[in-house]
Amino acid sequence: MSYKVAVIGATGNVGREILNILAEREFPANEVVALASRRSLGQEVTFGDKTLKTKCLDDYDFTGTDIALMSAGGDISKKWSEKIGAQGCVVIDNSSYFRMDPKVPLIVPEVNAHAVAGYTKKNIIANPNCSTAQMMVALKPLHDYAKITRVVVSTYQSVSGSGKAAMDELWHQTRAIFVNDPIEPDVYPKQIAFNVIPHIDVFMGSGDTKEEWKMVAETAKILDPDIKVTATCVRVPVFLGHSESINIEFEKPIDEKKIFKILREAPGIMVYDKREDGGYITPIECAGEYATYISRIRRDVTVKNGLNLWCVSDNLLKGAALNAIQIAETLCNKYLKKA
Image (cartoon, rainbow, N blue to C red; front, side):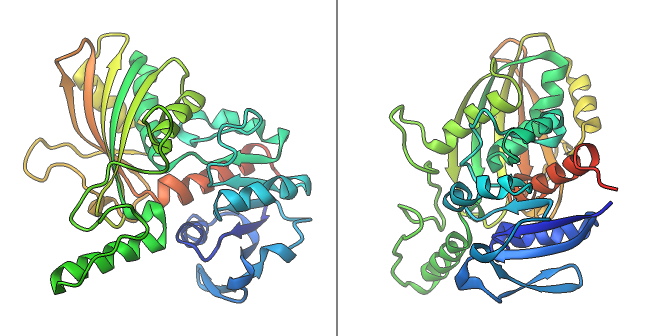
């Protein structure tokens, strides 16, 4: 069985990671096409030991293409995803545009792979927000164990979540501080170098930002609408890797040793918790890794059945590219089987 795959947004950070992971995981593709905007036409990208020249999305015919991995932003997804799906190609979309569409499944394969079956309504599957994805991997096995009732999460999100321009801004601002050059924020509303910004995405009427709302709404759709979630999302001067401090309240009593065992055995999770100096994972260690890392596991004695943990993941991988490819693998293994 082999499939024809198109990668849309192939020249971006996530698009390049998608190509790398397709090759690393030996995805059963007989042809991979790199697509981008007209201004990137002909630009070269790497796919395993091959070099692909990008083709223009505007001119591409998706007839005969099985899967389109879309990572070109919400506006492009809005314009193209349904058109592509109508040609018989299944779109796996990394943008936020279709996440709350009731006819589009929102998938973290370790959590709700069964929901992939709903792709037939529009031939579109949505990839969740990067901060939501890693939290879902951590919460799912715990929810199965003792039923989660409430989550309080604070995120520490790297600038790569805002794209290459944000990574460049952190680099230039950091250099400017050392050489005493003026700093002029552009991507972010305030200086990001040597600073933290409690503001990701736009503000809503409630006072929450849209990033915080996404974590609430997406948890309800992916895991359980009865879990109460409150989030504070913060941008930090880290190039790659999102971290989260997660406080969890359970309906039932919990056993700490059992929690460790459950997390160690859960798919997609690596537990690294030594309760000593350096006995935890930081974003530097998770860069380039597929796993979601859990550290600092401990009871919260201030509430009944409470737990704290620290969750770290490469946001360009599990938060975007890897999760999209895991969705594609599930799709191929169970729903798009070909002779």
